[in-house]
Image (cartoon, rainbow, N blue to C red; front, side, top):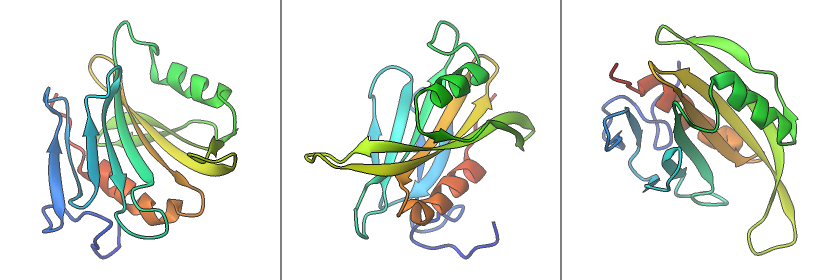
Length: 167
């Protein structure tokens, strides 16, 4: 990536990172050790990471990993991308990209979200990468307020760089 490791962007095996192993063995990744982890949310959502721990809105950015397979709401990555585009906001058309020898789909969207405990809304940017599996696909989604998105984006990119899928 060309950037120096920091508290926010995990360096492979760095002292400020933690390795997350999905309990079923579907994937593993590194994430900054200070970020929070939420598992077992049900449905397709495997895990969500929340951070950074400091700044204007601590733990307000998220990186979530969903797994869709046979019989799920979305039969293909293109179905998922179409549903996201139809859900409102300014959505970028999916672009094909290579990730570790796999053809992925990537897209971004900006959506208005309610501010908790308020009548206000905020704009949130979501970056999504859809990674095919032998059966189904993973959706890796980074979401953060537009104003703070650049701060957590390096963590999202680093997670994608070190994401391991044993197949």
